[in-house]
Amino acid sequence: DDMEMRPAKIKMGVSKIGGLGKVEGSASWMCGKTIVVAEIKGPEVTSAISAAESRRDIEVAVKAVVKPTVGLITEREHEIEEKIVRYVQGILDFSCPPRTAITTIVQIVSDDGSLLATTLNAVSVALLDAGVPLYACPAAVSLGMEKGGRLLLDPDRSEEQHCEATSTHCFLSEGEEEESSEAAAGSGLFLSSTTGATSISNVLAGVAMAKQASVCVVQQMRDLLSHDYQQ
Amino acid sequence: MVATVTVSCVSSISRRPVVGVPMAVMRMRPRSLESPWGSLLGVLLEEVLPTLGERATRAARLFRHGAAPQAPLRHARAQTHGKQITCDPMPVKAAATRSNSFGDPIPMGMEKHAGSFVMPGDAVMQVPGEGSMSLGSGLQQCKDVIKVTKAGVLKHQAPRRFWIETRHQRYVPAVDDLVVGTILQTQSDNYTVNIGGPAPAQLPVLEFTGATRRNKPMLKVGDPVYARVTLAHRDIDPMVSCVDESAKSKGLGPLKGGYVFTCSTGTARSLLCAPPCVLLTELGKHCAYDLAVGVNGTIWVSSQSPRDAIAVKMAIEHWDRDGQLDDRGVRSLVKELCQE
Image 1 (cartoon, rainbow over the protein chains, first blue to last red):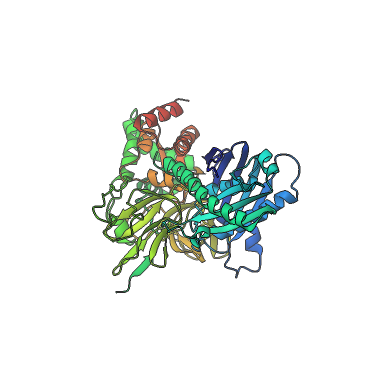
Image 2 (image 1 turned 90 degrees about the vertical axis):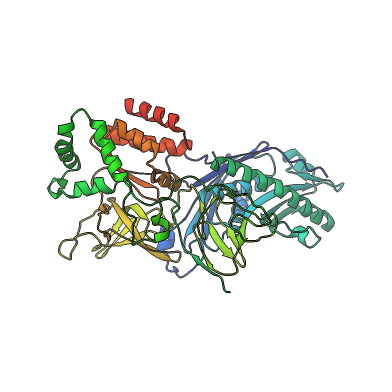
């Protein structure tokens, strides 16, 4: 199994045009030819929340909007929106102020396979840019499983069509280094989405490989942010 | 041997406003407050005419006066204000043994030194067995370990005060922060003020210097105010106040005229640095202006001519967008903006 991933280019703070205050955190993630731009606003009290009677809730509402390259928003975009909401809710720290809302707006600039992983990575970097309190640093890896058992990282559209199943796994990177054992191979996994049918052993092997790849993704994010901060 | 961890929001850089005295100067002439330009003209005529031709000196004097080391704000937490906090990061100390620079033994691989860049999920150190420590913004206690929740640079102030310095736009309210807010709503006994935090703050109508039930300040929606945060907690709406408690008037209260704009909180903090920021001194050489910087990233600027006010605004916005320029870059930027 080759551990070669497509070169990813990450840019932060792309949506500063239009003045500050409109968008707090933004990032664009380019994975090969798949380009996604994510914007984050919040946590803030929106008019919907202040008008709602249930200000007794202590949750943080997450709202996501995904816009395709062309055309109207369809079911495919709604699916991605749901996954983004679950993703963000899974990584928010409990120190985030309650009864607020975090709004995510994602624009798919071009789609060439591994769309969900690129979107979730763009959302993570936008959250880091916006300063939303996070529990840990998240990374999403997309994987394609071929019929012969070969695993492909970051498949593009033509490769995805040849795969019998494609999956996206999201990991939380803790600071500590744990010993890799069978039980710990899947640790840190908090969101996983697979399309297609394949054997269980394939899926588990895919998860293990994706965990190794997520370390590279987190390292990329860390390099970008530390470079930005230590300028 | 119980460790108590007090979580308090600490603002990392000195919160002394640069504008303290210029605002006080305006306040001593209440008659001339009808029109903002009129008041400034009055001040200028009385003070500048003798030194005509030395506009820059006056601006520098105002600025220097405002930036003179004042007595530390004693009512605030003494640890933060007692010393002059500079913007330099803490020097990285080499760890001789398997312990981090704070002297606490931690497992290998988890060492984090002050001044290093950290990401959410990084463990900074173990909660010490005894004694207490203060955690500022961006740090959380997670069982026995102090973890990071925001991406930024870890800062440390002796003896045991830690925080993450970030450059985000969203402001997290902390008690005794001086902020510039805009009025969102007026109610019978409260103003709702937008301070850029997760929730809008409440400003009681009587919390102004010299306000009584019969003599309330009439503020409209959209008016800027310079206020101090008096109550800030994650779960409740913050409260601010415009009452000056210490003897010296810091210039809290409504800001008349001028122009309000926003920048990131990191830029606002570096504008409030203890040695006055190069950008502000350079701007002071070219134009005379009054500036109120809030740690929430909102800035109010007022000047004799609108052109100068806009030049100040553009200089700060350029500085915010382009990152930290060195001195030469700042000078050329200011010259270019003020020559237009």
